[in-house]
Length: 289
Image 1 (tube, rainbow, N blue to C red):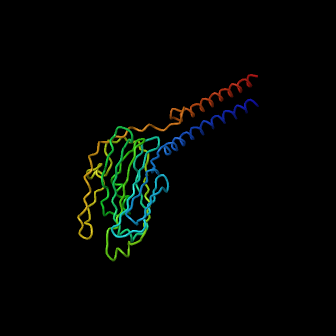
Image 2 (spheres, rainbow, N blue to C red):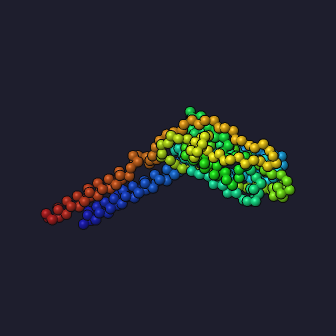
Image 3 (cartoon, rainbow, N blue to C red):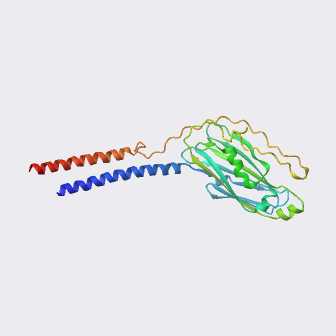
């Protein structure tokens, strides 16, 4: 009886351990796949330049978000910043959308934003650097930078070491009494968040929305004539983009498992069957006695 009870306890424990190990393997595989994606802003490559008297700063909020602050604005004053995101993870990652959060809604009506994008898909690898040019025209709105990025970088995949550089110039677009009241000595703060995700798709088309040139059809809005009779601004024609085809992404696996929890389940079942045979033989021996 003691041997029989002991065998039952051992077999039950082994079987339960095999099931738990298999479930943990599946969960850990998903967690590892998430953690493997890491495209972050490079804090050492955040720069900001302003006209005299205007103050400006760009800083990290977290790995995927930057905060831009500008003060002492005045009519036709300019400020610009540059930020670089780099793939420092262990797998290629695909652009997954941008979000902008801006305050001072009234002030935004008196500010123009232009946004220029360049990227190198594989960083130090053999792919050339690509310049998409201006994906947002000079008189665009700051609170619509995310739309320009989403239209232009959609489907962009960065290999390990690949990077994207964003240059954003902000200008107080109007002079006159109204602008003096609304923009003079005012301050602006906004946040920009850019997300990436893991992708398993094998693609052979460049980024963009497919509606035009410059990286597969980046955002090319109609240029609004500037105030006070200035010469309209025309974005430069971007260089042609080399056809981009990401390499297939290997599955993320736990070591020594072969990437399949079936091993744990099979071992558990074999141990259970062996224990069952031992119990049956023990019972048969008792019956013969």
